[in-house]
Amino acid sequence: MSLKVKYFGSSVPIDKISSKIHQRDLVIQNATKKREVYILNTLLEIPEIKKLDFISTAYGKRRGFYKTEKIINKKVEYNFLGYFGNQFFRIFSSYFFSFLWVFRNVRKRDTIIIYNFPPIYAIPILLIKIFIQIRLIIEFEDFYNVQDKRSLFYKPFEDLGIKHADAFIASSIGMRDFILKKRKAAKIIINGGYYEKIKIKEQDPQALKNSFKLVYTGTLVENRGIVNLINSFQEFKSDHFELIITGSGRLEKWVSESIQKDDRIRFLGLVDDEKFNQIMEEADICINPQVRSMSVNFPSKISLYLSYGKVVLSTKNSSLLNSPYKNLLFYYDEVNPNSFWDEIFKIKNNWAAIEQTKIEKLVKFKEIFQTQERTLVKLLTK
Image 1 (tube, rainbow, N blue to C red):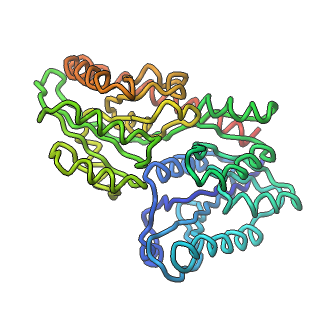
Image 2 (cartoon, rainbow, N blue to C red):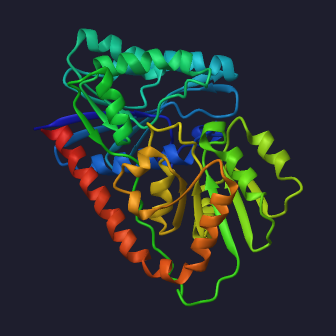
């Protein structure tokens, strides 16, 4: 079997890029980039794939005219779509470049994988699927929350994707069950998060530890729990705990204003890979405060935290409680500040014992991803 795979995403998952791409002043969520890197690396290990293309919107903050850029790196052809104008025209012009690329390059019997099925890719791919035989696989990591106004535009395309795709990569059991309710005979595998090979710095588990760094990284919106996290942290005043926040989103201003009088909380915004790696290496406890009502998607930051061998404290999200990761995490009640601090102090008081289980947890974590990767290979090649 010889496969030609085209993977549609939104990040720039390589370091060696042209000055023109740099000039865009890229706006990319770290979690999205890491997930797309993970999938690309998995695809590169499949010998049946003879040609692999990655297509990305590669949006930036700067206005201007940017052509579609093509870069070949490690047997992957990267295509960063062009756009022009300010924020409004940028979006619509990028649709033009997406249509142009799809109708010029997608061929009969291609395997198409699309991350979250945004309309910029959904529209041209669904149109071309009418005329030629392609295999469409949608990688659903997340759905837009109904409270988000953007869901009014995105949801119809998510529904169309569920109806017309040939197979699905679901981020969680909840995501799988949601798709099956809409399409009972759907072909689905579960593959969420990402695995990174990171050199873990050993710590002496018997060393006395008094100060703790807590870290949150991700999107700054209500349903990701950032408001509850800051409010809970500020309920207890102690200089032995520090909270580091990275990421971006519509609550950036609220975050900045709410922590102005609290020196224990630092908001760093979006950071580069080197700075992010430093933050994660220095972290003691990583937090996933996602609200429980978001029961379908898998919070990929969990796998990032575990890759670094960190202690992970999470809300009782059903997509985690029903996942292979459930026994690798600590949990708290999202709306109860006492629950948050009770768990923090349990971790603090049992730090030596927890540190001794770090390697064992890393082994179990790696085994989860090896299983996921086997199911992905099977989906693509069988």
